[in-house]
Image (cartoon, rainbow, N blue to C red; front, top):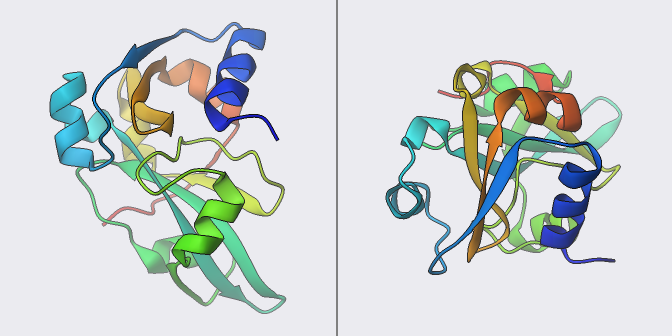
Length: 158
């Protein structure tokens, strides 16, 4: 499997997305990386893998929300028809995303991982996020993100 950064770059180039890559010191915490990149924390796409208990069993969601907000587990469960939700174990998140925590981009490259985005994140013209690595970020036009990622949009931030 190709490196997540390379897959993401290829996907965005192939779709002629409006984006730019920046290199920086390794950082994955929302508040700190927003300062390094010079973006508003609310335009930082924080991506977390969440395990949701459903009637059919367990399923995984890549929950994407503004960097200055907390995840609403009930909202995530409701968004995918589940009963209960919690953060996935770090090993499970790594297996599903191919990334270390803090480097997960707001894109799913796994059929096991449903992409759900909070609508408040999409109010910005551009999103900022770590791009599969702790030392690479991207600024991506929100319209390009929606067109390429095709996320489910639901209120999942508290």
